[in-house]
Amino acid sequence: MSKTVGFYTLGCKMNYAETETLSRKMQAAGYQQVKFTDVADYYVVNSCSVTESANKKSRQAVRSAHRRNPNAKIVVVGCYAQLKPEEVGTVDGVALVLGVDEKFNIVERLAEIESCDCASLHVSSIDSVENFSCAYSCSERTRAFLKVQDGCNYRCSYCTIPLARGKSRNIEISSLVKQAEEIASRGVKEIVLSGINIGDFGQTTGEKFIDLLRALDNVQGIERYRISSIEPNLLTSEIIDFVAQSRAFMPHFHIPLQCGCDEVLRLMRRRYNTDFFRKKIAEVHAKIPDAFIGMDVMVGFMGETDEYFQKSYDFIQSLGISFVHVFTYSERENTDALKITPHIQESVRTARSVELHKLSEKMHQDFYKKFDGQIRPVLFETRNKSGYQVGFTDNYIKVAARLPFNAKNKIVPVRLEYKDGEIIGMLNE
Image 1: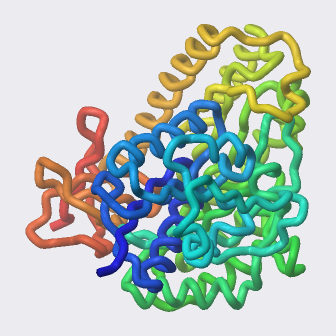
Image 2: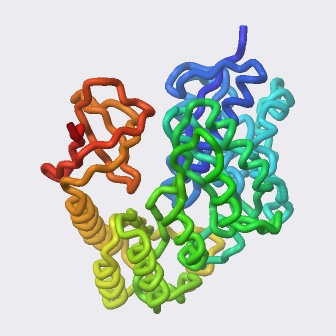
């Protein structure tokens, strides 16, 4: 009888791609995957450590698995495992902690610990990590996340990702094209390119990100690509021009801003200022007028005075973008941000987060309203509780439609109708 294993994933889309790849690897070795909420022989927690809250959620996931089956062997991988392996190893139930260099050796490492009662730690120094492990997820069947790059050479003052993921690295474009072809063979229509600093692609192969985009655009069967997130200083005019005329790359960008105040950007050690960022957004608007533009913004960073926050708020409001993904700053060990003053109280951080969430919602609604009455192609993915089929337009508008046929994994042109804050799709008959 095969051993059972349940998986739990926290954090970024790349973690999800890696979890699904681990699942395929374990199933190929004879393990049977079950739900994480089931009683299983093994549990794998793919952890996140972007905030202290993420660390806490990772520990909670381990404890919940241990309560379900005290005899199960629990494996922890991911950023928390790399950053704090000894701490992870002390959590009740943990049998194996695997760092960046070891997570994809999970089958071999599990075989080694069958008779071991204490946590086994396999975590190399992040400075020695050289390998790139391929990964993709396509459990949704309509959309896959393809890992094309890992690690980061930047040293933003608030960030531990270089300590958890290592230096920027990737594999050859030809290998990634083969993975995209494999995804296409599964009937998947859309691929989201994922990475830690995706625009920095090519550090280990001497290739360029734009060359990867051009190669992937030729893969038959994949009708849509999206770039998960790209630093503003790496979003070149060449890339924008390419997306504007591409067969399959969608008019959709996610560009981290982090703060709309130059003084704070310098404290963060970001590689651009607000003038550069504004010009980059204006270039996207000019060349791809219908593009969805999302941003990451952090509130409550060390040194962010009331004046600086207001400058950031006003700057964001002036950009005419589509959505803001708001993060609240969380202190991380071994980061230079801890030396910055003043420290911002939690209540102030929370209040600023609320303000930016409200602004983001208004921007999102304004973006939706612009397309009321237009006909746009929608890739339908699922069905909601009300019976509507749900999917996204090329420019990432979420659409719910009542259709007389099953449209899952099909691209259907529909007329958009803005109603009560949502977009309803109608067949253009």
